[in-house]
Length: 280
Image: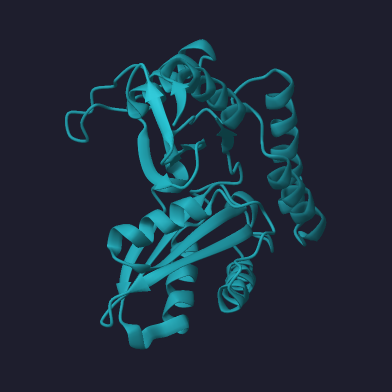
């Protein structure tokens, strides 16, 4: 049984908050450069250059890429041979978020209750999803999820007979209705199957996949490419000003489901597909 100390997790999450908020992942930045090269609209190309310039300034300072430093979402893959000493995993994550947002002057965007709307003043609690996996390590995936994009996300319970055609229609409809609100070019996570909440989790987790990494299942890899082409034909374009580059990537994940169901979730991420990862 390997022991990992509470304080180590806190320190790691604190640094992950800085990395995710201020340093655009290299694969995302490269995808944005590719989108600029492919963009047919002069306005769209100008917007994409501004996005790239902003990312470079944020990395150099370092400072937040966007003023909306989001609600922190963490996926924790915990090895079954790990014992955390000194406290609970969720408490360690929240303490790391509290310190990270305080020390790096990131905006506190979390309210304690969705109805009374009182700000918690430290951007906690985070949303933490814990999975038990083989091994003696902890893998943490962290994303500060801004709500300009999160608010454009959607879940729909399709009928099985609607199949791929229904999925494509729903994804395109979601993107078209979102327009420029999620600050495109976007990254889309699409979850198919399971139950309502499982589809949503699949869609969220999919957004951590590296740009260009296709699903290992051939039919889902094909669907990813077809969805990306359809989304880019909507004409929404960079920041909603029109153009050919509405999305830089679409990731699809699936799970077994009920004979009577076809749950589909679309999780929308802005052009700053911010995330960080650490293995302890």
